[in-house]
Length: 96
Length: 477
Image (cartoon, rainbow over all chains, first blue to last red; front, side, top):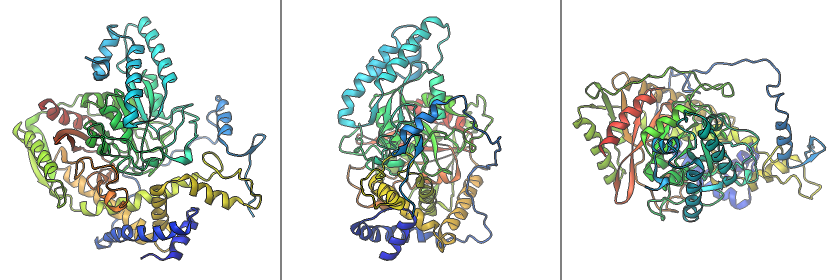
């Protein structure tokens, strides 16, 4: 079974707050899933290239400027969605 | 015949001949949706005002124009992870409970240009993560064929709405089977297009290399209409692709070759489902289609491969829900001693449901230092092998037939407490996403009153061929 410390470490990386109870729950739930995934170790992958996209994707470049200068309303919509703001600025809690 | 039982062409002809107005059509759907949805919970939001105003505009257009476009006035529903401007878009999550979409998804833009009427936004598993629509923060959707059973997922709301005649068609999204499996469970047609065939701009991202938007409809012809309307390259989605279609490809039955992979008829599969699928395949054979057994050797690894790649991409995509820019947030909590990290941790703790958290944990684990090569990179290499399997098979056959799911719709609550068992219901659908192929779920029979879907998998960008092959069997029913 995956350890309590491991669950806490992963949760911290994922920025996910967990209660003590949830840590126990994840210890129990993640283990069989990770065991199932272990199955992949049976496959011989020597010399095989990884696939990140099933189709060939290319970099697409564009000029470095706003595309929607003609739609100023968008800005207001985004501002409206912000949980906390001051004037037209996004407000956050202290970092340190 | 009730207006809500029409297919797209019939509704279109009725509108064009002025047998009924778009407003009348829209109102009969709204009335039915409001009434029936009390027991089904297929919708999260019903956009009555938007629908009525769109329908009125179409009626004005019909009075003026000679030609009425095929989708003008056709009422539809949109899965609630696809943005419709100025309408709430929750992705089935508490974290986006009050999120108002600031713009339209490209598919919505395209449908609106063609005059469709949007009746509402449909229920889904939170962030499309699930196979039963039970993971929605707004409660589960019920299967219209049997209210004690799930509609499948994650596009369960869309599939149930189409099956219960609450809309004429719907859009869903499919990352590992989320269009095809609910279509199969509800008895409707569902298409997962080739990766890149349809723009993902405005689709709330789950696993970006697997996600595709597609239609859920009553017939194959309807599916074809909607796919034609939403496909094509979009400058807002760099992974969308311009492709040449097989123009007017007609199925010459005697020249058709269909492959049936032996790895898809496995232990633990429902006997009745297996029988129905085999009968459907036999019908093709009896009509003169050449059917041969093929092998996709990596099939048994596809699900494990998927459950590394999809959660890994999800854990990265869902990092944006941080309680800062939009969505559920504890930022305004009065406690002055809290800092930014507390806001992240608490907002994500309070906003995400159990399954989403589970997948973020799996994905973060698989991508974390020391595990990346053993899990993520290994899965990507196996993904290459899975794609190669299909490429090899398609050198010999035009299409591949398999079941969509090993069982018909299961009972509500039956699998929620065991995540791994729930994941197993995607065993026949995930390979298609990993390989980026198009696949359609076609109703082909019932176990008691529960529908069973046949999966028709095609080569990349050969959706036309899939439609033609599907129509051969659909016409037989």
